[in-house]
Amino acid sequence: MSSVTGSDNLESRLKPLWLRAQSGDELAYRQSLALIAARLRGYLKRRLSGLPDEVEDLVQETLLALHLQRGTYDPTLPVSAWAVAIARHKLVDLWRRRGRRDDLHDALDDVDEQLLAAEPDDGGAKRDLAALLKSLPESQRQAIVLTKLEGLSVAEAALQSGASESAIKVQVHRGLKRLAALVRRDGSDHAGTEGRRE
Image 1: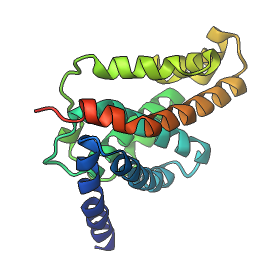
Image 2: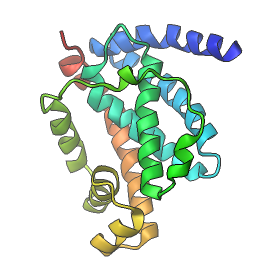
Image 3: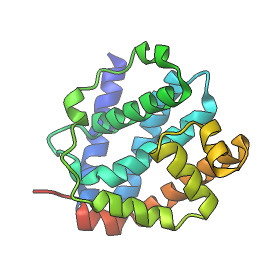
């Protein structure tokens, strides 16, 4: 019962902020991302207790995905459930990359799969992602493209790029942190221009 109350309390604070962010309010955008990040850390820490180093990477990946998919958000749905649904997909992707399909059967929060349905993108998210990736150093951009977009394992990315596995991990981590900072910094510009679809 307390977790439901906590979830309701989060949503009551988060949704008004997110709706204001969708209208271009930069402060509301930063505040909503902070609330979402805290919720995601709790969600992912419980599921990645054996892989604590992956938690922050997945939080940053999910925040980036939220930024890129913000135009698909349906205002009739809870923001926290939408964010967790995206995080769940990122978690599943991680297990697939790691070859840990058995862990997909762990109990996950009840999330309506309908929340995961996104309307076809008009290309704006791809343009956003391309612009964000261009701002990264080549080594970080390549590591993220190979592991996060093309779905290669760290070992495969290392072979393809000629870098060591540890270098790939470091570049992905640094690149995701830099992307998250860029998304937060530019939040008002993006939230105002593409925030709402009618």
